[in-house]
Amino acid sequence: MALDSRRLGRARSYALILVDMSVGFTDPSRSPLASDADDVVAANGRLLALFRERDWPVVYTTVAYDNPAQSAVFREKLPVLNLLEAGSELVEIDPRLVPAAGEQVIVKHGASGFFGTDLHPRLQSLGVDGVVVTGLTTSGCVRATAVDALQHDYRVVVPREAVGDRDPEAHEANLKDLGTKYADVLSLEETLTLLG
Image (cartoon, rainbow, N blue to C red; front, side, top):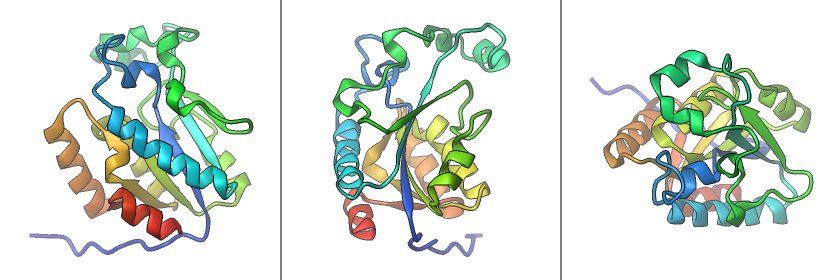
């Protein structure tokens, strides 16, 4: 039976959260964690341009490890995560989306941008009540961040073209589930119109 799912509607003020748009996830020639993400990078570029033009807050996340104890069980489950060593080029934000002055990069060790970080108090200090969650991957860190954003009472928008996944089926299934339970999943153009 289908759930009675409704649109969240527009927040008063948004922050853009770019989840793990780092080289380790955007460049398949350098990392097995990556997928062909050129279109996702381009969509994020359009959103970045709008947020920067309006001087709205932008926050990036990246996964980086400098201690074996950090997310030890997660890394046991997915040993490929050990490639994401702090200081390596794989944890740097993709050069096509380089953070501008004042744009914060949060280093995380788990899937969600909220877990074990100060993302929530940062967003509170910015006075936002909504977030646009983008990045990689839809079935992993994007989903976890979007779910946690809702659980912190933010209105969540996930622009379909601005997220991606190594697995197309997982991408679609997670967008469907996010749209039913946790976020407004919109096209990039619908998102730009909403923000406009």
